[in-house]
Image (cartoon, rainbow, N blue to C red):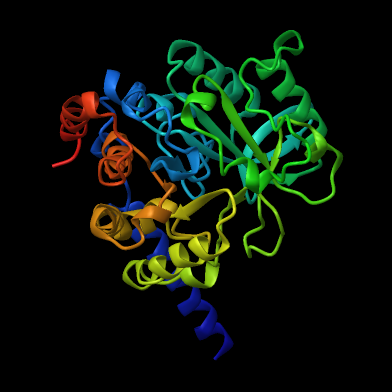
Length: 342
């Protein structure tokens, strides 16, 4: 009997691997990579007075894993390419490996964090109407101090804080700071969030504290709830939970919020691409439905796996419904969206 069970288990594993490798994937050439001036500078159409926490922002989940192996790859395009496609929020988990810092998930690694930060800086210098949000959501092998030095290297040249949004009034809570942070103050700059509690690096004026996945930290500036018992479910069941998540964000009303729009690979066998192939269309329909939703006001960052121009613009388009688009830019904004969203 034991031999039979082992044989059947091996057969099941082989079948699942075959399914994952044979067409249940997100081919790179099926994604819309034809970025243009609109996707590179869409924030130029957004009102200066709009609060950053009220803007609908396209986000990338595990943004640095375009170079990871198939079982961990969550993106087909590099972080620099994603910025060109309209993404303005990059979620990154950071591992120290030797002298290098790398994006990682589980046992898999991706882009160099040095390259990511250099690309963000180059993008902002070329597109100073934009802001980029860096969310360092998790760490491995204690990379925090080295990461802090890299952030200083790229974004605090000669101590001028040219590209960092700073919490200058230290008596103001991080969460309260975002109640008044307008896009005009954030243009051409990065906003940096880091995970942790009671760590020295969180005392830096250019680092903001994020909440944990359960939302149990107080006075944090970014909420990104992740209930893996929910996004291990089918696509339809997971989407059924998202309205409740937005309602939870509205109740907390602390800083920025991230609505996670991807399924989680609980098996680590089929890989993110398999799950996205079953989920992408449903999630895109849900994003579009938010324009007429009672939850629209709460929508801020929405993340996707395998982001491209179309997925990004589906999220960006919500700014018209939210009233964030400048009146004299409304037609151009609508035309820019129409290039990628039917």
